[in-house]
Length: 472
Image (cartoon, rainbow, N blue to C red; front, side, top):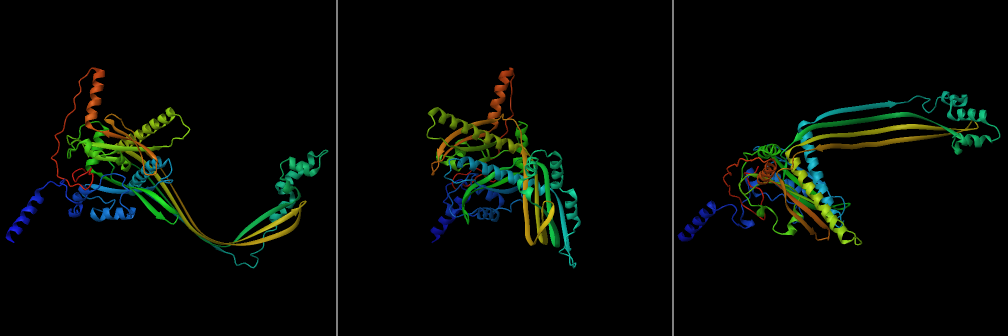
């Protein structure tokens, strides 16, 4: 028994000092309890549809339970969440493009929510109106309005006068129609009169506006969900993103193309990219990580899809794939520029109200200018009013120096949809290379200061890991 006890102690001691990236089975991993350990154990920022049954709400709740509430600043970092539904079916040949657009929409809404919550202004207007007519003659209408019609004050009377003055050999009805009077009004005219007998209404308008900039926002996790609804299945792209002191500082540094004091655990590019081509189907959006020298870098996955008609020639099909790849590259590059700094303008209007009215409508008919018939209609109105309008604009601009395409890929998913993508990286190595090329063109020598890599921090991995506790 003493030998067994001593063996267990020795084993525990070895585990205590073993690197956290050792291959420990998932069922033996300790549940993270601190903000740093949760970030360390976070899954990569990839679109993952492998976990069946989990919903977007479950995913966010689990993240908040293990880490911190969304939108709360803690430990120099804040997390934000966004989601957007994919338009169309996974069987649609354009599903890959719609998937990319859903990601863009989720990121846009996330930025807009942040700017609105922290820098928005709100204006509220409420209008309350009440009226009740209990008069004994409440159902009567003023005869003076009809007198105006009979006195020639109506549009029909004006047309009639004009027609009589210009009438020569034509029939009066034909002349009226030729002068613009609708044929159905030539023989008969009606006059509408309305009045409100009771009103009990409330309208409330809320207008929110915000203008500000946001930099250093980068996804920590993205996931694709397929959820059931009463109207059928819907595919949702969910994004959890982080904005920290480190990411903001790095965003400022790369926008100015200067060395950064931010450092982290060195990683090789081969460890960050998916191991096989199928893995790229799970990737979407931006990553914040570190290069082999511990310097911060960005990996951006842009993607779309291609729909090739069977009657296209080989050259046209090839060009369609080339164009889609270029489009995916532009999307990847845009995510990097938006990380540097994005200016947001957003406005939202919410209108709600309750309408309860009693209205009386009278239609008086005239034939040849004489009153012929009267028709009364009483209407009871009870309505709930609700309208929502939201519009915004996000603009970003920056230099592409420091970016390079590290991977172009094509892959069909399980439904036969052809996805194409480009992976663009922003690295200090590529910045040095671009500066050197520029210096050669100007016959100048350019040097770039190299930062001492930070001390590597052990990390545990369950499946492929991108970020550890020191990243953010």
